Length: 234
Image 1 (tube, rainbow, N blue to C red):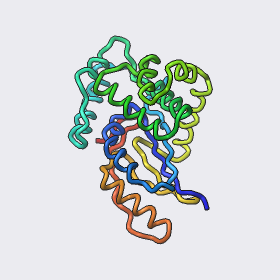
Image 2: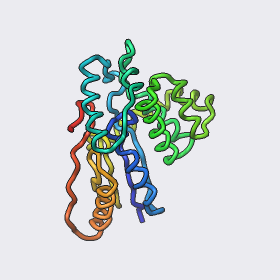
Image 3: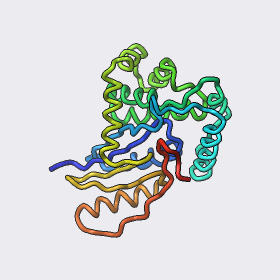
């Protein structure tokens, strides 16, 4: 029998993904053991689509951050805003995504999610520059990954290829923004979240999807707070 899968599509530097992190942790802690969990990167502002953090873009992020904090309680520090004001800084999400792929390759899915959440705290609270490989390796060390191993894997072209493959998979699945949570059973897929959703909504959506796998039921309302490369609906 084909096992059920839970696919989380994210971007480490997505503000709403950071906002949903506590709820997501609680959600995963109560999942049945037989459920196969997969985390992939969707690509928010990677490489050529990276954004220069000029005044306009910083104001856009501040507006989104205010909504995230009001909705979730997750905070953004002055250190983060100071980072964005650094001359020449680009909001490039690809190094962070690539680092998460490396952590997954050296450990497992659980450590990858832990790394992403640690990275989010380092950037959004401590103001750490995620474009510097040494900074990423220091965060990865929290997962027990030796610095040399991380850097060697990060610099290996296959890690970039794997990251791009995750972007392509998210696109193939029709994911338009992050966070996104999808439940798959056999050949059917069910959207549990298309944007931020609190714990109660995630649990309700999962129960619906599992029930729907056997018989029809009422579909829960979808939350519409979504971050993508064009912006956030807030």
